[in-house]
Image (tube, rainbow, N blue to C red; front, side, top):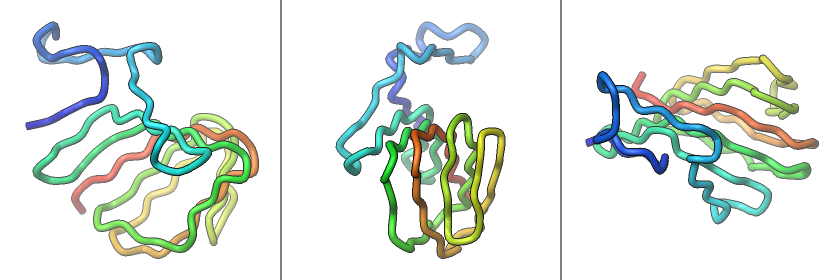
Length: 117
């Protein structure tokens, strides 16, 4: 079954759609200092999910990988990985197992999706 951290419920959905505003989101600030995550959609069985991620200046992740395909769209700000600088409007997709780093030198908001390849 699909889950969401959005306060809304599918029981109130029209035509199977679920909608939310930024005020509806539940932000997890316990993941890492300087990082806030709002899960928009999560499929517990497959592990797939979509989230908004806010990173404060100075936030970084050491080299790591993901088991799922990762898509990142930069909504605002700038972040870096070991290959490139990504600015507002930029998009990157990584296949499962791709080693990368992440760093934000300014406030940054990204939409991240992890899904089966």
